Length: 359
Image (cartoon, rainbow, N blue to C red; front, side, top):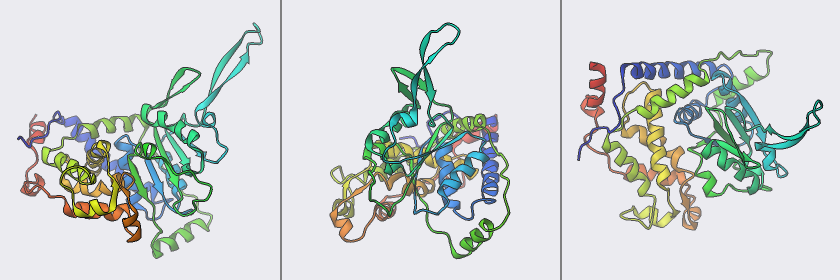
């Protein structure tokens, strides 16, 4: 079986765009650091989700600047931004919008007019998404998947680019409605936001207790992001890298094929095919952010945690032993065989790049 990438070659303009995306990534980190201290891994995973055209779920305790990070990122990307605070009494129409009757004073004719809800923005922050009932949570499903909303039988397209970045508090679970697996699966990445290091926390205190008000410069536009999303899709992936991603996903399914013993012991349900798709897409975005024109198995391993942790359901045995989905993912990475013919290990780029550079 051929191990060559199956996508079309990147042209010189595309390769220049990859370089531009890496430069933009470096500038974004600099701009974000004016407001957000640390959290470089979180920012990287957010940008991976954005350039791979996916939605992200951020998990972290209150006070870790999740909301501030998303708002600052929207400013740096020059995108429209709306925040929706999810509460138990929030209705679907509070998100999507509603139709109202308006009367033309000149003619006296009454007609329905659609008033857009806060979901009509490039970046929508769904704050504490697990604090609203399933009916309202489901209002996001069509928007996240189809990038449109249907009200009164009429379809309304959402702006492009469009991202749902949701937050969730992992500690306080009273009065919450856990997201169903079908909706969790809509999120490309599940991003863990951890406590800052001591030096970082000291810097946070210095920044937030003074009169300093950082000014964040705009690095990209919506049109730039759409162009770079297309570039990410064009990045070729060698067959052995795609097989590696599929192998990791299939190893999570305890009832299917040859899986490790720890999966049979600790996993109730594994990841579906969407996980394989997102592993490859996220790996493409990561490779481009680092200025590489090809995807390696290292990229797959780097994104395995945020892609898989919300798609693996552990059982009582895992709970009794204190094992979490992240522990299962780490074991899977160690257990998954790596193709010994890694393209980058041989010091050679795939032929697809040589043809592009030679043109």
